[in-house]
Image (tube, rainbow over all chains, first blue to last red; front, top):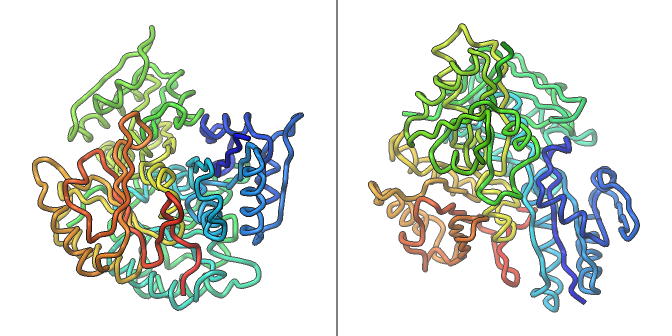
Length: 244
Length: 244
């Protein structure tokens, strides 16, 4: 009974962005759990049980994984990107809080290429100076808090990476965010929409805030807003290393 | 003459955190440039010229790489971590600004596991909610700006990842940062010191701000300060996904 549990980041999509550490964990696993499209990225093989589950079932999935590992399984929960950035690692620790009997289980978090790093690389280097990373979904926090964070981030002149900018069910949040940013940063600030980064569907588009429209983002889009220094060079967008 | 230039992230140190994309670029390169300890991670082989250079020579290195690629070389600039986070990608684009004749050169930025993701994974999930990422070095910006960003990040209740917390030549910045954070966040806020993450020298230590001392950080340390919700569970530290 030497079970273990790894929470692994599969990166943004392309297979050559999966770290060898994660590939090795998957190769040694008896059970893989995760959101349906992420589990679909793991090849079936004898001895491996795949447990795809729906979105918003993170806590149940984490408890199931803890039980499988406690029973001796070699268990991997897969996330896209990095598991520690708006993904399954925090959900696992929330589940672990309810199970003090399992606090000494062999748990490892395996980092991955999170979407903002792949998006920034595809666009150039818009996160090359101090930046922040904000989840625009208001599933788990009130919109007023998101709005306050946007305003303070602009005041600090941080570049900004936005995850989950726009859901079908609540598209109005991103409409408001764009309007706020345009007011505070002016129309010339650069904004990059990176859709389906590293996949065959990848589209990278950088425009002025004055030309940005909410429809440029969907749930597969990572949005990066530059700081006051962010600029274009050739086909690229980047943020200089220095500031005054 | 089909030269290209890649700026590649080697990750924080361990070889199984280097992406296959980066390994493939290195395998096809004629020239590898970078800071001495990063170039030392690339195995010599026939047909490959290694060009190690000193720290703080980033612009010269970038210009040299551009010239080599323009002459037909297959050139990789290596960074530790991710090239777009306080590393060589921005320096390359600064150099490219001075060379409009090379704006259409085949340039690719290859993402890597940046130190904060590996540090967070080793500690648990302290960056599991909105966070910011700040370079504490005042080489390229005034300390007053760093101080302002710290205060606004606390006001926004962002978790914080700090790169380059403490240089030998100017250790006083981190002393002041710790004092400011203690005043604003109180003594019970959790702070994680992740030294030499993913290497054989790795040490991960999480303490209360009231127990943190400047000596806990050096230039190989990535520091993470939690938000107001960040807490321990078993041997781990994590930030819950929700906030009010």
